[in-house]
Image (cartoon, rainbow, N blue to C red):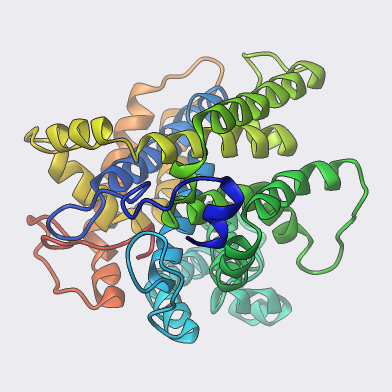
Length: 390
């Protein structure tokens, strides 16, 4: 029985809460969640429809998945084993190796696009923040031109992801020693910052606030991988999730927003509470045998398996490139978020993102040391890997 078992009062069943891997070793339920989250992110940026952030808080779900799979990389055996199988440095280097090449290609194209709009090469030395493209622990400098935001607007997620990967060994140790208190503290962090009981300044101020918003989701992912989440008694888990949802709802009511104008990204505390409640629910129900059966049935549907495989094997490429494609689509169709049209921007975005996947998606395979595949074949092979970046 682990410390986590003792503090939840749950029995240390060896199979309780264990993910349901496929024959290739992958957890198809996690793959489905990641695919759905990527699709939701793209649709949100195409439609600029803030209610989608409540219907499916995709960023919180992706951080929870990242926490779960990073913890898996650090853990030796299945279930609740506490022994580390690989050195921490090896795991971190592997994560960075799989993320950074795609970011470098994306950043290089962004800088070249800025130069193509007439920005002088000699002026690049005035933006030392461009060096953050090499290892984006902070947002790279945004050049003053029309296309710059398209290449930097979505990088906050990857910056936060890198920080969480670096912090995971510490978070994993804290969770194994004090699981309940670790979860309580990370849930409370955005409230503490909102009430200004703690303030953060300096170069990494934006990143620190992003981390506090999604730290609870990342730790919930760790709790899922450790099997702790599924072992929490139902009379404790469901009222806890319900309380988080109620507080998020109260925050929404007092914020003065309406369902027409709501966007979780503009309300950090509400975003943090609702995202962790949503992610915890998805991670919890994914441990149920009935859900595993439904997922297995879904995988047998002809179009579902290949679609999920492509979205997972090219998740990083899609995430990076969809935003420039969305802005291109909006420009071509004179898009207005209040009146639309929505169909053609969506079609153009999908087509342009697909071209980007064909053109540079292979970088993910090179970074992951997977065999390269022809554009007309499914990427990733039979055991494609990744948690957005693998």
